[in-house]
Length: 491
Ligand code: BES
Ligand code: MN
Ligand code: ZN
Image 1 (cartoon, rainbow, N blue to C red):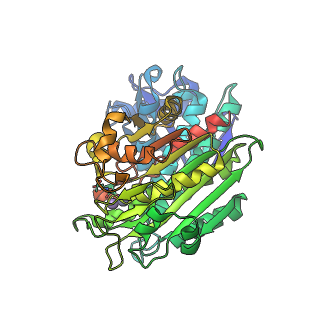
Image 2 (tube, rainbow, N blue to C red):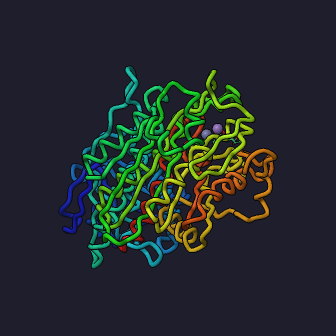
Image 3 (cartoon, helix red, strand yellow):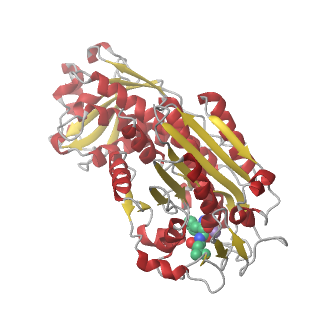
């Protein structure tokens, strides 16, 4: 999708589709500056009563040669329009537009701006909502392939905050281009999206955005003594990869922000094998890795003046004659020993070594992102990412970025009381903590490897993808993390 910002008189901009908000009194907003004829026409249409009173309801009306299609959207009282209401209105508009034929779409944004919804926000959410809905995965279909709807969006703005509108568009597009890469990677089948595929994706990003890329193979991972990561990888014939991506555009002496993503490209559970139902969805178990790649893409597009490192440990978790067994004890890169009581708790086993590796960057903060526990879905469902941290200012910053980006995270406890659930009779710790508080004990496990820096853990098991008829990756939490980094960059 291409986006242009125009400040001309609205009556000078013809377009295939114009988007018009309708208030509770069945009227268009004066702030749009529409001509009388169009205003009266819409009034006459609305009298027919087909546009529901529910905020976010939409309706297409056919107009004249200047605006062949008019997309009406109910905004209710424009003063009461909130970020959430507006974003869901954009989503319903985008869904209405998706099957239509048009080359350009005009969104006059003044009509949606109020004291709590800035010009920046309206521009950003408009672009994001459209790009989110218009995204299509069907690259492997050979029949009934949906043709990508390629169109130009014109954001019309009349006011003094043009710089903010430009930023809104720029940020929104960067977030969604990153998120769409994350979706693409997640949606690919696990026989294509392997650790090697993720490494190749990192290399491509490296070329495009001048990142420094390192890809370690099995031998190099052995040299690093990542005994815990390797223990998971050895149950698969697909070779593991340990990927680092470095974006060093900040001041030389500025400590980096490190993002670590779980890259299990398929999780069958290993010897502690999972039930068959819905096991295909475990192709999404690389959602953390895909998030890191997506965020790095957004960072590259925005060229943020920060030092940011992405780290991805990637392998498959399969049952095999050589696979890790329940009862095995492995030695992590940190030197701590782990009794593996359940091979399906593999995410923490690969992450712990990546978190130890992260120490070498002397980071300002480390944030790991992982589809870590089914228990997280039980706790929070599909609306919020679970957030854990050993440093409150960091989790607060992430929570606020999530609210702003409409990509919420909810803080969970990481209290010492939970730690004894990981006690083992034979090693420094067990890799599982029993049924109670499964996502918290998983975070407690990771916390034993993150003592040397400020750290946050994001469990995205409930938010990374959708199941059922609309099965597909959501691209979350790329918007949250990109927003966090934009704020860090002071942009
Ligand atoms: N990748 C899964 C977590 C998961 C399961 C995410 C279902 C989303 C939906 C993870 O590797 C796993 O299997 N975790 C186990 C841990 C348990 C054995 C302690 C789980 O949640 O069941
Ligand atoms: Mn698992
Ligand atoms: Zn997993």
